[in-house]
Image (tube, rainbow, N blue to C red; front, side):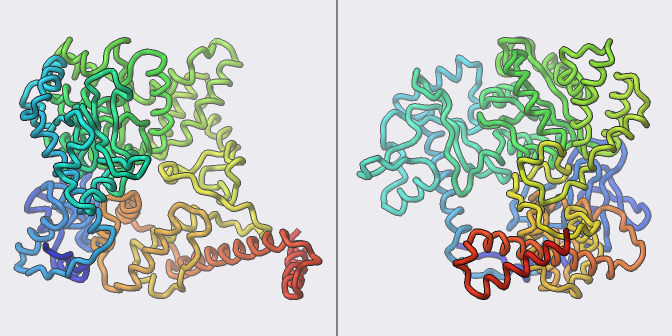
Length: 614
């Protein structure tokens, strides 16, 4: 088995490549100032927003947010996995790839799990056409309107009746059965006498990752057994909050995606594809997550949410609205499509045809209209109280939109609806603390009166420490971390002159760990280019943030090196203050009579310091 490609070789490859040559050979570039421009190959656009920076060796699209280095571009543009993209680029400049011996570890284990999942997919697919009991499954698919070509395109399969068909086929040894267990394909018996197949007598829908590898399954029952749909559990290679059914097939069908249609079920995705609508994805029977949205906006600038027109559909749309607002940077769009009650995309496209269905999608309600419809339902705008109520409900939602232009337009629309001058509305909204002014130590229960900063909405909730007894410095943590990140992606050499950032992850800021890792990476590789640096966070939210910051014009005002030094000192001071606060809290849990002499001394020092501050 081929070993891992050494990181040293990857860095050397990126240093020897010119990203302008790599991209220009695939997408013609034009010089525009100090950068190069083109229309983005990853989404449809009329004017070029795709920029390539030769000095920093990275690309970024201001329209869809795609960005990265030469390897990442080739992976996305030519639909290659990482090793194949490296091999292709290395071959182009005459470099031979050295290989490291493969060690055992999580990545090796994950590869073995994926191999089992791939083998299982092939097994299920073969059973659909060969097993004696598969006639019922084929008839069901035919009754739903699916043709054989579509079934094969999505690699649909059949898990035969019985408790150990897959185990007999792929679990010859204890190690093999252990892999099946780790892959979520079998379940341990309660009496620990062995395992049994998770999927039995079901139509199987393989779920693929962005590389096209099978990482999980959805199984549709053919009897009255519950649940109707059974999904793979969370595993080392499958996380429901990240994966979307049909996204790989959608990306494979088109070089760029003008829009993506988010539907509910597997059958919706497959049937729409049969009618030539190849841009639908499903959420695996779970709620939409911020991670889903971040993935979608990497590949398209417009997401259309499709819901039933009933009350349950409206509630689901409200949840989607809450999630999508913090993701709406300028250039991104969201729309809401409500189907006639009783219909789903699967049944409706068969009833009205692809052209009529596409017109429904194109005419879906923009997020701006749905925002006011949702919050304005039942509000009497003929009264002053009603106008005040609408303003109170809508303004916090508008403030969560990170796109400056869209946010201003929404504020203007709100001002128009409630009969207030936009400037006055902005002035009133400024009475609340601004997003970036939310102190990072606010307890979660106290967050109700604040809107989280837009760039942190997509991250998991963080446990925040209580406010320590410290003097207010005037700086705010999110601003400090983000400013330090921006300086380092534009002036990476400055990382060599700052002290260790050990401990800043404890501050609770979502991007503090990234700042620490970025500084370490630069200090380990002083000559690394920005493009190579971004490769360490390829296809992650952190990578997207770094790409955005690197694409921004560098705002040089004053002594940047001194500014970075002061920011680092501020963050490290906060770490020390937080450590001191935790020590104090720990001492407060000990009765004074039980303290050692040293603990009593520390406790009295804390009390003295608190009196001085207060």
